[in-house]
Structure formats: C-alpha cells, structure tokens
Image (cartoon, rainbow, N blue to C red):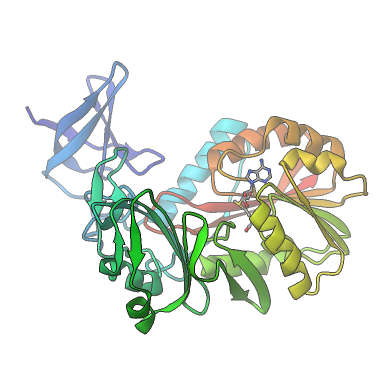
Length: 394
Ligand SMILES: C[S@@+](CC[C@H](N)C(=O)[O-])C[C@H]1O[C@@H](n2cnc3c(N)ncnc32)[C@H](O)[C@@H]1O
C-alpha cells in the first residue's frame, strides 16, 4: 500500500530522507519539503528504501532532468536538483566537521560545462547494445546518448551499430582535439566497421582485450601549453575545464623538492614550480607516460618510481612539499605513517572522496592546519565532487 511521507533532507548521495515511525526511509528523486506517495522497495531492521509513485507537492528546487534515462540509469542522481553545488558544499563542510572536528569554508569552483564535460565513459555491452546498470543493480539500461559525456563520445555511442560485439565492456576516451581512443573487453566474437566509423570521427585507436585492433593505444592531451601522453590504461582527470582551474591554483605554488604521490601520468606535479620532483604511481602504463611527459614538458629534474605509495619511504632527499591525489580509498596506513615521519612543511591533498579525506585529515590534523580549501564541481549532475586542501605545518 502506498505511504504518504514528507522528505526532510537529502543524504550524501542525494536521496531524500523521510521518517516513518522514527524509521529512516531513503527515497530516490525526492527533495526536501516534498510530500510524496511512495512504495517500499527494500525493508531492513534499521532503515528502508522507497520509490516515489506520486508527488503530492513539489519543491521549487526541482528541475526536469534533461536526460531521457534519468529514471533508470544510476549515474546522474542530482539532475533533478537546481542547487547541486550548494548541496555539495554543505555536505562537505558538515562531513569534515563531524568526522574530524575541523571547520572548512571551501572556495567553490563551478564547472564551465554542466553537460557534455566527461572525456571518458565506461559502458556495458549486452546483447549488442551499450548501456549502464540501473542504480545499485545489474539491471541493464541500453542508451543511445549520455548527456554528461563530450559530444565526440556521443557520436561514437550513436554508432554502436558498427560494433558487432554481443557482450563485454567498452571504454571511450576523447582528448582536447576530439580524437577518440576505444578499449573493449569481451569474451564474444568481435568485428568493428572501422572504415565507416572513421568517416565521421577522429578515431585514433581501438584496443580489444588489451591488443591493438586498429591504430594506436594512446593519445596526447594538450592543456595550458602542457602536453601529456595518455595511454588507454592510464588515469586522466575527466573534466578538463575543471583541471584547468586546478592548474591555476597549483601553478601559484613554489617549492624546492617535492613528491607527487599517486602521480598518474605526472599531471599535477608538472604545473607546480619546483627544482626537483619524485613521482610515485603503481600503474606501469601511467609511469611510462609520466617519464615521457616530463621530457615533453621540459621537466629536467623529475624522477618516477613504480610501485605502491608506501615507496615514499625510499626517498631520502629533503622534501618540502607532498602533493597527494589518491584513489577513492584514500591514503593507506603504511603510507600515512611515512608521510607523518617525513614531516614536510606543506601537503596538498586532492581528493574525490570526502569520506576517506576526512579519515586522513584526522590523522594529519595534529601536525597540520588547513590553510586553503577548494571544492571543484568536477562531476556535475552527480553527487561526486573534487576537493583540494592545502595543509601547512603548525
Ligand atoms: C585519482 S588518480 C590521480 C592521478 C594523478 N594525480 C592525476 O591527477 O592525473 C590516482 C592514481 O593513483 C594510482 N594508485 C592507486 N593506488 C595506488 C597505490 N596504492 N600506490 C600508488 N599509486 C596508486 C592510480 O593508478 C591513479 O593513477
């Protein structure tokens, strides 16, 4: 039987929160103040999840999502909400306050593009169709466009008929020049009509099951006069306009000897003014790219180490600054111990996961204070965001 509830607030993932006899109910696509009729889709002892059947009142903050797949696709869960960025800031500030008792007031940097910004998408292939999985499920949603991906990527998605592949996964990447790299993993037979695909796209390469099927397996990114080789398996930030904003902040930093921890293809360390840099990264393809990128960008004193971030203990030089940009899991325990032992003057912590950031800040806060803090809307329409905290020794 439908239940009438009023949404009180949003959780971190943008889901509405309402209460039924003191039990917390999470409701997808319900905004604060909205009176909704829901049906319960999941019932647990301490919480339940519900789906809106009807809106009895709607919030003035509600907008109609532009994406035709919004209801099914689990990707852009804030598309129905006008005040996305204000929400992200409030969530960030309160998370840092409650988890590590620190007050932050981040400078918020908007994304110049709210749609068509992503330079990489990963799609499932099922029954010759491409798509995403529904939120928290393996229910396949076939798509013919993705409004947060660059137009050049959408042009490829629209030609999925040229890929005769029954099942698997496809990654499509696009660079500054709208050149395209595609990587496919499949256990099915495969055939791609390359000649037809090339007619209307700047196709540079297709890699299938880690082997080059056509062209090449890397391309060049060109950002603010820097050149970066990016191999198909190397990490690169997905929103280039936001990366340019990050460059503006990092390029103001002057230091002597620094470490770029989790350096990827060497992007962040390259734009900092320094005399010497040590980069550490556990992906072979990224480190290979980083070595070449140092040459291309005339970085004469950059040294790169392949391995786990805990290799930081092998650096015996005097270090003034560490920039860390870990994966979503944050900094591992061993690495954190080494960072604290190094006792450097400044740490720049870039993070896409405020939960692990706050866990790590808790360990750093006795020695360091937050001098500057930024929140970048790297991933509009989703609840994700990127932050930079510049820490200095107390
Ligand atoms: C968020 S990305 C940042 C990359 C780079 N700083 C950039 O901006 O392009 C995190 C990087 O850490 C690497 N990585 C993940 N776990 C690691 C570990 N335990 N040790 C070293 N590097 C790791 C990944 O391969 C990835 O390149």
